[in-house]
Amino acid sequence: MSLLTSSIDLDTIAPPNPSQFESSQIEHLANLFLRAGDTVRPILLSKTSPISFQILEGDFEYYAAMKAQEIDAQFTAIRAYVVPPDLESTILEQYHFLRSRSFPNPITPQIIPQKLDQIEQAIAIRLEQKLTATIERTIEQKMHSSLQSLQTLVDQLTSQLESHLNPASTIIELPIQPAITVPKKSSKPDKPAKIPSKTTLKNKNTDDHDPKKLQVLKDLNTMNFADLERKLGQSKNGKFARPIHEQRSQQLFTSIPDMIANVKGLAEKTMQKIIDAW
Image: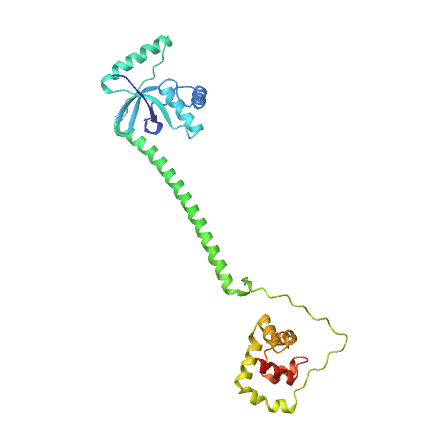
């Protein structure tokens, strides 16, 4: 039967007797462990339960490994022989014999037997501490991720709410209208606005009930500029598209006479031609 080494988690090994070694030597060996990534000589362990071990030989290496873990948390295990109970005395005899050949006066630390329940309790406490730290770290990461997602949702809802409360800020794409040449201003003084004649005022009620005139009035108030210019062009009066558009932008026309009175240059005869061509 051959002995195989295993990588054993330091948290599953019951701590041995208080260290009798110099702290400088322990720290030196710990740094050598970190530089090499492992131990050169495995320690000897006996299994005390399915999840715990006790040191047979290798106290010095154990303390150095714990120091290495203190320096670098990534160092969590040590290489060891897990000695079967039936071979324990033989393996220890071999180990002591080899050490006596290397060190004429070996110092064998006194081993104080520890109760099984105490060993398991110490290991359980250390495992619980590690598990608690891992759970807290995981919860913190999850909460941070959830807060980021919640903030993104709040930003989206705020943006949508602002767009509803302030429609003017919403960009609306309008159809591109053809370029319009603005006529040059004349040096002649503007003619005073026409005052509707008595005849015009008299016929206002008639206009209010004429279906065709009502339709023309509605279209002249609501058509976009391009359609307005095209429609007026049918009667060769497209030049009135601009003044009609500018005037209705300030206030919609209430009647045909109202339009004649407020659109510069628009006479009754011209208005009648527009209505007839509509």
